[in-house]
Amino acid sequence: MTNKVKDILSKEYFSRSDIISLLSVDDDAERNLIFQKAAEVREKHIGNNIYLRGLIEYTNICSKNCLYCGIRAGNKKVNRYCLNEEEVLTCAKYAYDQNYGSVVIQSGERRGQQFIESIDKLIKEIKKLSNGELGITLSCGEQSEETYQRWFESGAHRYLLRIESSNEELYYRIHPKDENHDFNKRLLALKHLKSAGYQVGSGVMVGLPFQSDENLADDLLFLQKIDVDMVGMGPYIEHPETPLFDLRNKIPDPKARFEKTLLMIAIIRIMMKNINIAASTAMDTLDNEGRIKAILAGANVLMPNITPIKYRENYQIYKDKPVLTEADELVGKLEASPLLKDYHIVYNAWGDSPHFGKRNS
Ligand code: 5AD
Ligand code: SF4
View 1 (spheres, helix red, strand yellow):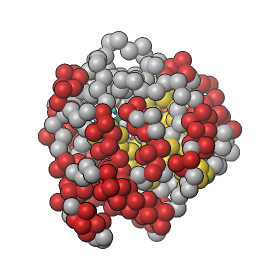
View 2: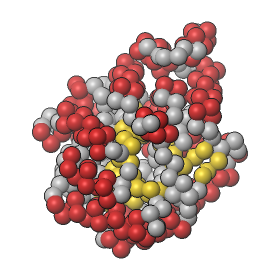
View 3: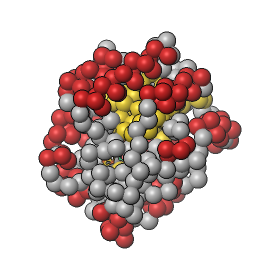
View 4: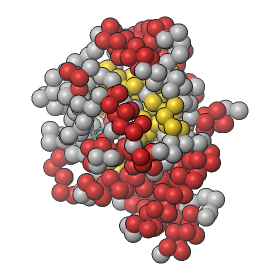
């Protein structure tokens, strides 16, 4: 098999069956070949930098009912909150003072003029308080083309919208099949984000019930086809107050989900050399050094949570989500980690996706 892995890794482009073969590798030495290749590609194309975004979980109010998510509208056990403007700006100021370079505003998917205007105002105020220096990424779900344009014009320039699964059938196994969770609308939203001018990020959850290596290979080919600038992928982690929890015996064990996610990160790094890839928080739930390992597998973006601690337990999209890790503690741990001695955390930089610059030049 080693020769087969080596042969695949030497190719310019991976076919679907190449990707499936790589995803099925379970021998440690062979997995390391894949990680090594990803590290080489990363160093050659974008260098060993790590960029920071302070993550602000703005509101856990959500109009959707994704079957896997702990803050779905149907979970009545969640205490709903929405930060006020001052709280958000205090977080943004913290990110600015810590020289993080960027913030991410993440929220449940909310509709209505008031929400649209609040986000718009926050974008403008964050720009103001940082003299235009803080970069702003949004992760606020599906919105109209007009809303995306408005927020872009106000100063947001990156947007994350995971496709969750690019296989329509699987998509409807993890979402209610109704017009509020329409696969085609999600695809359209990704198109609108691109035409509005954003750097666009997408990704999937790894280790879902009914998900095969074939599905995962198609997910990677999908991300390549829509030519994303950024990728965020994490392991699926069951949440007891969700419908999908009933299928918890039908998913790979935590270690397998974790390892598969690492492979997904490494393979997409090799396939899309100069994109930004986030080391997702969910990695740390399944492994103490989850995010560090994600970086070693090819990720180059870290999003320390800067939401005020008292709200964090209410943003439990999956069980055992870390709520107590302070942002500066996490960054300090990475700075001190001997595993990351060859990597540099870059401060005071937006850390845009080099891929975006290239596709627009
Ligand atoms: N496990 C892992 N990731 C989840 N997300 C939502 N629920 C879960 C879960 N149970 C992810 C989705 C969403 C992102 C914000 O969080 O991929 O896009
Ligand atoms: Fe809402 Fe996002 Fe959770 Fe779906 S995944 S229920 S859209 S917060």
